[in-house]
Image (tube, rainbow, N blue to C red; front, side, top):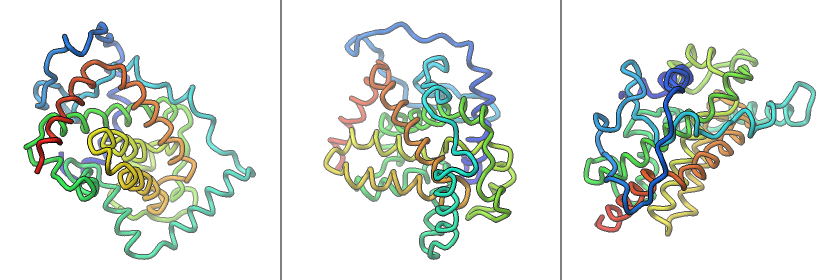
Length: 266
């Protein structure tokens, strides 16, 4: 997947989720009897031929229900909506270097999406030397992104740059964003689950990883692509997906293998 395709494909995950909703969850198994998880896209399978993203670990019916977990987005005239507008103005006024970081964080293409996290853990996460680590991160990203869509599709919240007749830090994404619900933020969910997952692989870097994951979501506010409350909700859904993955045997088996890969890294 190219960098430019990353954001556009996120917007289409909703329709893919509907198409795959008839799947059934695998029977629970113990970690000791779980087969070695696949490390290739071909073996994992794609969400669809049109959008070649790896399938997540969670069956669509097992994803966290974002509509049930989240309150409605802030209404007009509330303090929360006023805070959203204030954050929009602050984001628009952010300095050039922060705008550049926001534009970089908007790119969900693999391996670019993990490049800023690689700087923290100090090893490559995407050069092919750690196949279980790569697949752990990529499939977790899919689960977090898909989990946002029940609420996204229900509320269809208008994006801040649309409501305020502004622009974003990444103009090539604007046409797609206009038709994709703003609440909760899928980008934020992806950044947060990457951070959470990596804390399991590099626990000594937990603080720095969580700071990076948080800033990844805040980049959506700086970019004017999301309201502040969208990003808060995105982290909730990512945390819910991460919690759900703790009981998935394939995820746990791949996590153990990823830990072994990271332990061997120079």
